[in-house]
Length: 198
Image 1 (cartoon, rainbow, N blue to C red):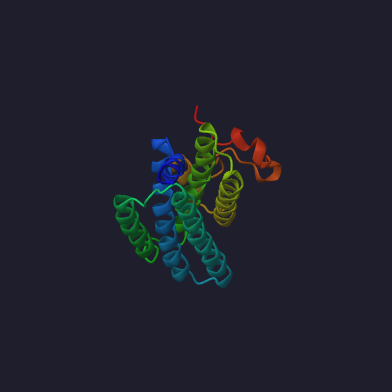
Image 2 (image 1 turned 90 degrees about the vertical axis):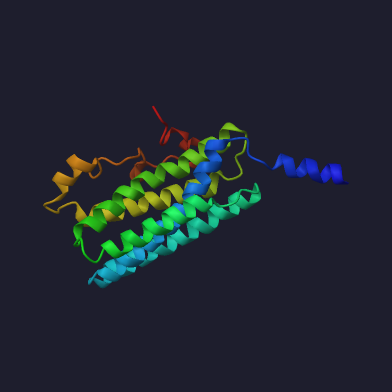
């Protein structure tokens, strides 16, 4: 009985250090994003924007719960380092929203979300590389939700006079940091073409 239990426990471990690190980082980074959106929403005057960003904050908390559920299945503990680091980052960004004006919080939120899309597709690819496909749908769904966030933020700033300058300097805007096209989405089973490192 003890031997069987030990075998089951060991079988649940993930032999993929990069995947473990990415899960831990994403778990903590979602908290930073949620904190940032609290400040972002609170700093705005427009009611529609406040409501939209509050929903995005809720999405990030939900993603954190979903990532933790996956981590728990493989006995992966949150990283104390990442939890501390991203807690501080989130609080600093949240506070900065009150002093850096309207445009930059929208721009950098879109930039962040653009990169987050690939985090979840990369997790899916890492899991698939070790023969695990059971998380494909939830990872795909989270990636697409992050893409929806990116699309929202870009739509809010696409006509702003500062956007061309920020696009040149920070490399996000008209061209996303992922290759997901919301008008021509690949289904889950064909989504491994997304965010492939070259």
